[in-house]
Length: 118
Image (cartoon, rainbow, N blue to C red):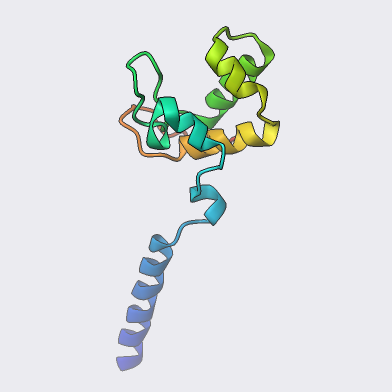
């Protein structure tokens, strides 16, 4: 009886400890280049300074990657974003997209179980 109670306590403690820990520091830490984004899109990409600037927080990472590549390639026409995207590597774009996707948002973006970042 006592062994069973101790097992339950240990199991509960292990579950709670697992819920409190982030998957990895890379998944929760803001990429260094996200600081530049915050100047217009706000902290975590969720509080743009002007209404015409989009919220990045909670957007799908594949959409953000696609948009940044199009700014970089000149397919999307916005001089400010083109200049910002010009210096980003593919790895930078992916890291930024994954970071902004993971941020708290007021947007309604349904979670898709099979959705995986490229």
